[in-house]
Image 1 (tube, rainbow, N blue to C red):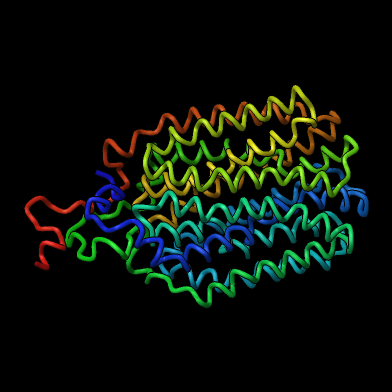
Image 2: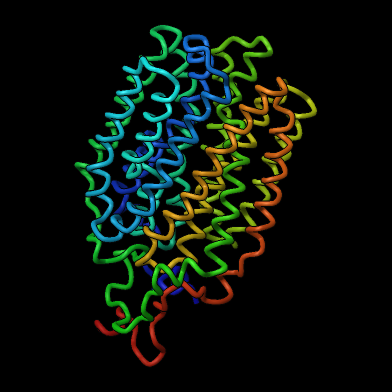
Length: 437
């Protein structure tokens, strides 16, 4: 029996999780939208202004995503254990202001391409505590029966960022230039810091993935957690890492290119940003629905159709041209909505709670690297062929192959995963409520 189902049987009302932990969920939702992930949504409106001012190619500009993601991928294996040891609040309290400072530095940038890329790399390193790893850990710690829904709500922060940030950045650029866009983003990055001051978190010693609302008298002799090295050698870990590398590449490869692609067809920049924001619409709509469904049904079977729909969107854009951009953006947003939620949820099923921060950081690093390489490859393919056709074919193929890889995972609801703890009460012992009678 897996950890989630074992604690569910203890009968704590799921509604109480939402009522007791709404501040944590609010912090995670806002932080997910305004943290490091916001850089991916704001690069699209900035491509053409930067291209016009500095003469860089689109492939060169989208290298910024690669550098920031590589910076984060390097830092994540270090911050994951820190989250497990010191907790979400301490890590976020340090990383949030550092991230805001590095984004502010971009608003003062006046050098060459190399310095621009280095600054983006620094945002990844110093902003690592503002990544989805931090916010997913905060949610996993406090939610059990409604973990899928809570992760879905958290991920709507990313969707709302995808919905609101592109038109906001386009409007700011139109009125005050690209430097003001970075300044605005730096100020927004400080909002989660305010929420953090009013949010109470569990002590790190309680461990991730153990809801404080249920199982108040845990098994005094649980199976010991496997070492991080042992978990890194499992099939489940590598299946998750490879799957989300492919899905990250596919779903993020076209996001920063939607706006310049539409502008190339004669669409006004502000209107192009509004059309591209359909990615956010799909994410906002898809994520809570997905979260609600994966609390009730096998998660992979729920998410794979969403990834296939995103692949269909790429094909429609390939065949029908820019007229299908809104529909494609909507379908990619739905698929992207499934991706982050599923990655967090499945990781919590196949990773021991005490190792969640460390191991999930590796899986998220694989996702970040894929999501960074995809836009860069798409940009260079455009520079060499003056077309996004090949990039769309690659994205559709990776969506399908990533889905097939996920489908090969052993079902967590039929047998206990090798990295999951045994938390079901022993048959010879009374449940906690029975002991108190």
